[in-house]
Length: 206
Image (tube, helix red, strand yellow):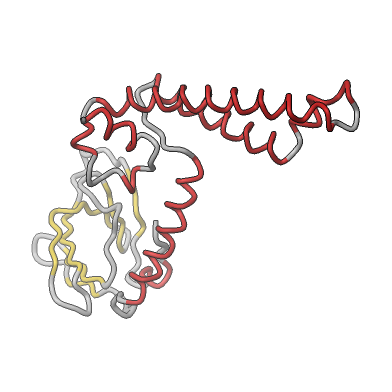
């Protein structure tokens, strides 16, 4: 039963797998291999049938194969052949890719979701920076989260280097609170963010 679920999930983009992905378990990559192979096989059968049906209607008999390839039916089947081949190669390297048309559906779905989220977002206001205190720490309150601010990120503010020591949620209008401490000189900089309290007006959604 889990493998049958994995077969279905292997056709879907990650967005639509999450609720059932645990049930698929280790079967997902094997299921992706099976569905990719079946996709290629089905396309080959349909392409052969379509080509033989097309031959009597070809404008130039010797070029019938090229004519069919560039017909709407040939282009669609070639697309799904390449889709299946890409999915098969990905599965052999341990990845389970869904079919490309559903990634387009997922992308459109994501755009609509972001549009709905923006309707409920807090109004844009500049960040509030408090400090530094006696130990050199600063506190930043923002109306937007910083998705890339983690323990590896170094933040430069007023020509000083900081690292994220803590993050918490508070109340609007600036509910995203970040506590930053001075970065030791001995620590390696893995990522650098040049911070400006007004940058919130120019942040882009990922």
